[in-house]
Image (cartoon, rainbow, N blue to C red):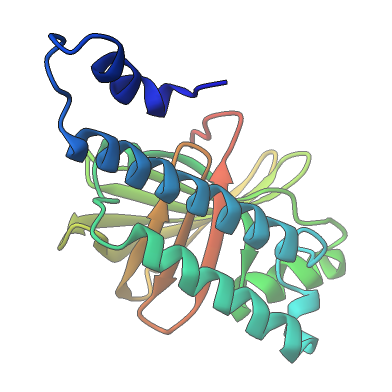
Length: 215
């Protein structure tokens, strides 16, 4: 059975008077289809690799797995090359799936020392208003978040500067001083996930949370 990709050739052969469809039309469709298939395959491969890594905690002691995941991220970066990942689609509440960032992983691992556990770890980005919150939740009421300002510096890179930090419980709040600046580059972005690396060489894989986080 003929597929939609073959329809122009069928029309041309059945009706010689039918306006000829340029070959490049087929080529463009085939190229887009091929890139889409490659992206889906690479995304599934990456998500499969990180699915049992406890947000990166297990990867810290598995050099082989780390190498595989970074190779998969590099493949995603190739597929995302030339795309704009700093537009309105960057805005939203992003939930951590996997990272190499030691500070975040330390807090996730040791939250039990404080009689709690780490819940969702989030990046809340608002491109239009130039804002970023890095958030670690501690259910049912605790949260630690760092406010930042952001500035788009290239089609894929965002500069950020910390402005304040807050540790909050159910009935209390402890402000903390801001502590630095840097950049991150979203090397791949689609409707479901984002893959990024930052100024320190750390990697991040996040998905769109099914909710919006608000302070």
